Length: 605
Image (cartoon, rainbow, N blue to C red; front, side, top):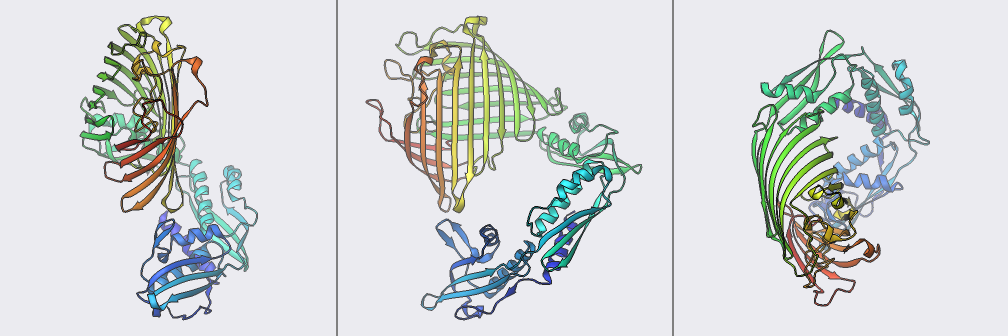
């Protein structure tokens, strides 16, 4: 396919190349690039009518240089690089429908400083427009779908991107119709200098059906798990979608370091599905570390065996420690529980929370099913039985009611994560919709439901700038006051990873001694502009808003606290080391600091 695409592009360039862009000799000062060899390039500009095309062109030229929005580092001038950029510009314009464009290079030298500014002044000239696109020998039952692909936009230029894109879409239609070995040849006619017709000549071949699934490279105990994960029905008409889904299914098992799904022809019109696999080491140890100014160090470690109990059934031992929370957990799981993408798990864990106003010891058994709708989207229902012991450490009467000795809760979460980097993202989104309902002590008067949606988004801007934003809500019902909830089910705000104008958990309800006791509802939001500075250093300017309310009657949507400040980041292999200074904009209570310094290892959101 790749070689065929290259041949198409070369053929298109050849057709357009009959009138490739010319280079004018009208250059300012000296037209001889050799005179400036070794000079500093003080600037490189392109002037043309199409601004979008100009931006795309500059990205692929050597003389453009690298750097941030207001600073560029250009290479030293060389005639070879200059001529290379000139040839790339010619081909770029031809492939984008302007084969007769005129390029006028100009130089603006500063002899004293041995600097030269280079300008490409481009006159695009008339574009080659598409007058017709059609197919030949396309299967009649699929022609209606193909017709939508062949529709020409008003004034559409002949470009290699659109020709190749249409060919890929037509091939996809053929393959989805069962024509697994279909081929397409592209022919381009030029009835006039500014007109083009494109013909897609099809060789469809027979309609194929799936045959057996053959597993290669997996141990015997995993073969059945692989077949169930591939989940391609024997005898069904060929389509690429089941193969793509099968490959995703196998990757979600976390058992193989290499997964490749392809087909082999048998019996003329049948295809065996071949799963080529390479198992990854079954055991792994992962460790993590973070640091937040108030929380101090947080460490975690996980030992995992992915196939300890055979047939993909694994075991993980996990633990974490911080000043306020310590956890330990043992978890076993089974893949392909109800569906090829469903994993069942049972976890036994214990945790200890030690806060200024309470101490909570808990032991839990959780039964969960995780459904991976895709590599980015996960749904997870769970049922948890908890046994706990609560000790109140506050003089405020009623701050923590006796909740009883146990709790049965049902949880559900939906997660979508398409961040481009999990440690230091610059684009993409993370969305979590979570809910939990409980029946402490089996008493219906203690029913509660927590709603906790949150979202984070990163948008890359020009010059290395990144716009980052985070929004989180929390709401509990039907309780009217926070003291009807366990302290670890309440909402808190303030601190390094929360509202940075307040100390940890200090935004919201406090007891008589000014210590946090949590609320029944919260809202938090943050926006940042992140920008590169030098080497691995970056900066940020942020604005945080937030509030936590003690009871339902106190909730005021616009009763929000606001803080702003700068941040400094250092990128490292384990994530950013970051320092932030928060300045509350809205008035703070007496005795609260008006400037807060936050130091962290890891993302603040």
